Image 1 (cartoon, protein in one colour):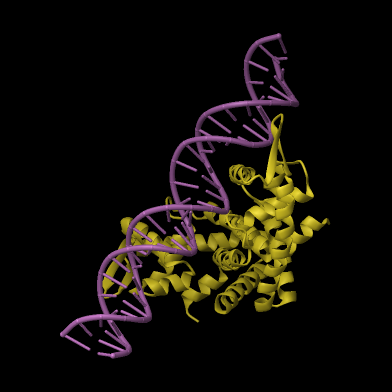
Image 2 (cartoon, each protein chain N blue to C red):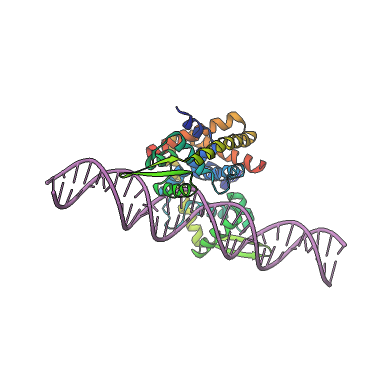
Length: 144
Length: 144
DNA sequence: ATTTTATAGTTGTATATACAAATGTTAATT
DNA sequence: AATTAACATTTGTATATACAACTATAAAAT
């Protein structure tokens, strides 16, 4: 193995970005929701479990920037999947009935996605890796 | 832990994207190259180790789409860090003297980046995780 | 030799995402 | 009560990235 490869393999920034690209491609193939990219579906899920969640809290749970959340919610609102309710400084987000329906489909797709990558990477491996990444993100976000 | 968190933690698409965002932020803080985002630096490194590399090969080594490579090279060419040489269907990419200089600085920054995340995640952990992600990407790209 | 097919790269267009500056709203200080 | 500071969200703008359609070149098949 040459030096270049060594560097690429050992750089977590590089391997992590590449891995995210690979698995995003897989996710987009598996999730067939017309216009909705996978990230929107996670937002829907979080709202499902936290009705009237504040936008700030949503950002935190998804690890996205506030401006990104505004754009996501704009789109979901236009599609009539969530509603905004202003409450002083804050904005509370909830699902519409249509949003609930999409959520149910999403859960099915999630299983499919899990099966797709588990087939390639192995079930236990996938679970472990996912947990590891989750914890590593927490550490980085806490410490920086 | 509630169901929502369970789902988020176990979905590799989600944890991988989030982790990539976290570490990209760290990388952007560490790499201070004015206009050049980290990905460009990796491209420079690969060209450094493979003078006259074809664009296709570059795409493969970086796992990026051809159109993305065109845009990257456009930018690097404009900054006079690489040169294009047409050769039939193919385009060969090489570093300029200025590109070589940037490469050297980049290697220093890479060490800094490694130190940043190793401090938070641990040295061995970081190395292992990086290797794991590298291999997992390979598997996914091979099998899909 | 001409036509067809395959391959490499580019261009148009779209999207997720971010940061910085602006806006609006509540809380704190004087 | 008036001013200031803090906070939440939005808007403007930029960027990495992708796909699909296009162009240009080379290779293969007739």
